[in-house]
Image 1 (tube, rainbow, N blue to C red):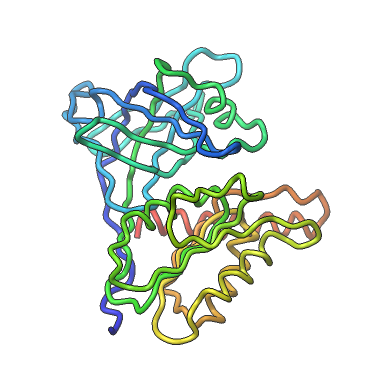
Image 2: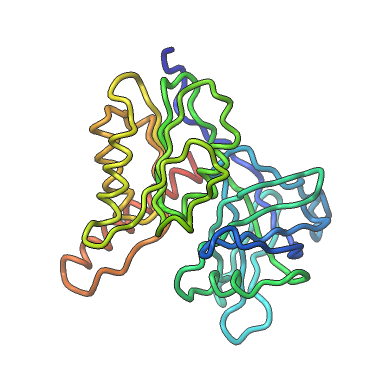
Length: 291
């Protein structure tokens, strides 16, 4: 089947919502799912503006959650305008991006999955969240719709990419072959309810990027016009870009997002690499949000 369209992006009105934690569940030892809900998942009046109900069209749609600074009781929030937000500069809101794992409009529930690594502000909030807690979030601002007519799909990423990958897997209609590779710490971090996933485990002495790229290269067909969706740590995404090229995936059929970055030291080469990765990530984010 010939490729008829590349991925396309839908702009959505961005809305700031105040929601309540309904429940939490430990999906794996390092992944915690937090379900939020509330009347503001529907249409409501925000100041002088009537705002739209929550909407998500793509598997890698993400929201921004707003968190209080350490020592503060409440977060600094942007201001709702008509279809967009005004962000104050001083003090600036503390915001982190998370993929929508599941949205059930009928039940009025939204799931967000948090990888509990390190002690960042979002991870600490997720680790301690309890039913009844308040969470402010905004988005999605953009939905990415996969291409129509690709001969195959290949999804690859680390555990931070799992919420989006899981949605792709669950919502896939079987119209094209789907290949999936996910890097996790070990068997305990596998989400085995997801069918058809190749689980790649970290190994001492071999970089995460090489492990996942080798698995993706093995899975990916060498013929046909394929679509690749890749996300995760910056060095992994960089290596997977090379894999996509080896598999003959064209630029218009590659969706790549660097979600986070390992700190690799303070030497000149490390600083150059960090600046390069930041530039690539910034371009990817602008393309995601404004294309």
